[in-house]
Amino acid sequence: MSSTTNNTEPNKTTGQYHSVKGTIVETIGNTTGSQSWTQSGREEHAAGEAEYQAAQAKGYVEGTVDRLGGKKDAVIGAVTGDRSQEASGNLRHDKGQAQQNINDPST
Image (cartoon, rainbow, N blue to C red; front, side, top):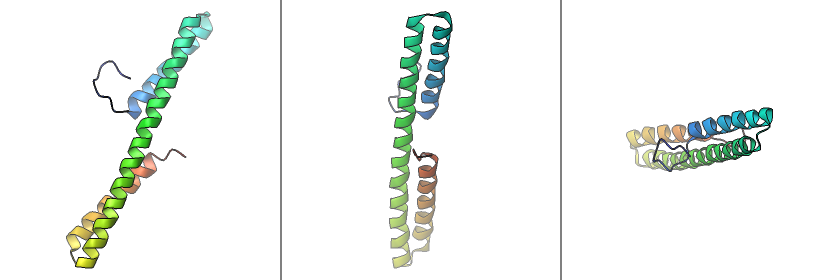
């Protein structure tokens, strides 16, 4: 989405930027009667929203992986008596849950 980076990963920040910029360009187009600006703004807004949603979904999935992996490590640590592995697993689980909460598409 951004011409200043070569990163192909979706990004919430650049998604929001393009969404807002697109809305501004569309508003200018509507105000001035410039159909090309209006259309360009709509397209950039839609692309920005799509990028934001893709980044949000990616973050949610990453949180799920951490949450499940952490739970597995915590259980194995508890069963084997390895308190360090159990604590590490609990931290990873909590980190994953926080990442899921931040990227929950229903909020």
